[in-house]
Length: 74
Image (cartoon, rainbow, N blue to C red; front, side, top):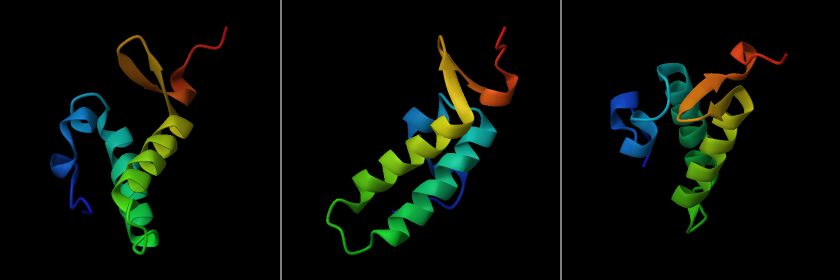
């Protein structure tokens, strides 16, 4: 099911990702969910695509998700 706002996201997303990453997840999930309407596994596919979208902009360091642009690369 598509998510109307970040408060509707699963707890595993809401409690671990920062707000901007939640926005990315929600947008990617909703787009993938609509794009795979004829697939019986569309919700699973949409979640995988949403996590992949988050991981393009964020990296997990310890227990925290940090924007790739903010990671110290020295």
